[in-house]
Image: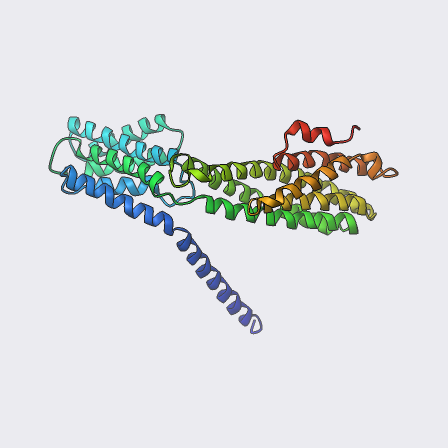
Length: 368
């Protein structure tokens, strides 16, 4: 027990340091979103208060903040959906309150009607929840002085300002997409290296490690997909990011290739781990996997250095032309030849990732 105490203290210190580092990273990464939200909220308040004459435009500020949010997904469609959900909830609530008044049973009625109708509008549960929260404010908080449906007008102002902020004060979501892209290709490279070790050294444990590493790439792919889709959507409406559309569309091609290639590599890793149970070293197969892995690494590097693109296509073209099972393992077992066949779709996916048309990529493969 005494000997384990220093280890527990060390573990706690490491945990605290990691937590602090992750907290600082999250705060730093949220700075652009925080600036966008603050500027938009102040703009909504100013329009409702000074231009429209609303004395306490709480709804304008609240709807702006909830519409933009701090989520990774900054697509204009998401912002519009959030603003629409809140506006529907507020408008329905004000209509119902004007008919039935305020009270305990009125709260129940308004919340029920808003939840049901909002749920019919959108499949996203957050849409209905956002509408219901604001409807509760309408029923409980005293009415502001001024015209009827003041809160509804504030919500509309907030929605318009939030959409304008998405275009005019963009968060530069392609930075997040670039970070996820690098994480993915780094993880795939580690997985490929393990599969290569598995085949070359007949190391079953390396195959299991490679498969585990490749399986862990799916959350990274999902995160990159969200960031990239958000970046594309914002770039299409933002005058400041529109020039980056070609770069983002190229990244979309990389994402498709990486997603398909990773799926193929998982299958290849499972097959390799099974093959080497006989203790036979397979350097020829290991070399093929290594070359395809190098091609994928070059595709990842092309995003940062377009000059690398030609090298990736040249290497992958050479590998694709050699993927003939009867030549790679002429005296091998049928299971070895089956692994070569499994490498062919991977080569095609990677070639398409370099920008080659799929029919041209397929034409490079030897006829079997």
